[in-house]
Image (cartoon, rainbow, N blue to C red):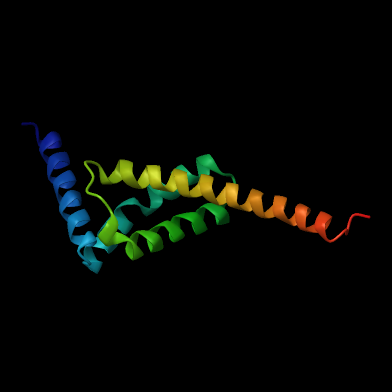
Length: 116
């Protein structure tokens, strides 16, 4: 086994262990996952949405949600893939939510006859 492949295997195995520990409430494991992926997740998010502040909020909200729902999370074969997919869906859901709020605001104006 090459040294590079061996190092990658050990790193992935450590992340798998951290994921399981995080799901059990280990704050240090959660911190390691956060620090391992935060910059890459932000960079990925900036490619999806051009508002940096919006993306930063989404990523922070994702990690808060992960901590709150950790006991219900499934095991994963790739922590990296899981997090990247979660960030993508979080950004899309938040954009759609904001669009719905704007749409509801227009409906509310119609209901209140503010356009007439």
